[in-house]
Image (cartoon, rainbow, N blue to C red; front, side, top):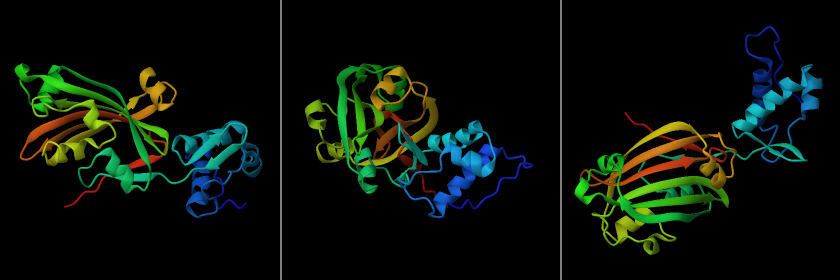
Length: 247
């Protein structure tokens, strides 16, 4: 196995980072393909005359980025490239995953009618007298791996016949369109980094404190009526989020 890069021990770039980039270059150039084992820490130590700690840090950095993955007792391997979830148009989870060519399923953990908090009332633009919402918590799977934990609030005043039975096995956005005649027009969304809570860790098969992405969204029906407020926690193991911009 030939390493295209040589370490510059006089460089301000840390040695572990130079090794990380050398491994990344081998993957980018096709010298290492998805599923291939990567050089062991011992091999890296011998090749670059570095410490085991430095070699381990380089490999761990790529594992944390999802470029490599470890299997207990077997070693470290090149991961398959992350599929991109595109955000050039308003679409639900099922549509995005289907567009990526992958299989998905959803498990409803909670479906109940409740009084909305002030934050949710403001997001959905409903008054205190009509502040009942459907609170839906769903666990999403992609290729049978836990992928996201999604909490959605739907105003009951705009969807009075909404029920768990209607939603089971269906896309929420498709249900809004076909059952209730609501055509979504646009959404506002924010993305922020968060740390995994114990509850999220349990359902997403992660260690508490793992970095995650939190998406908050308000979806609107034409012309400017909010019909959904959601908070969705995403794992970053298999996916990257792609956003398109125009001028």
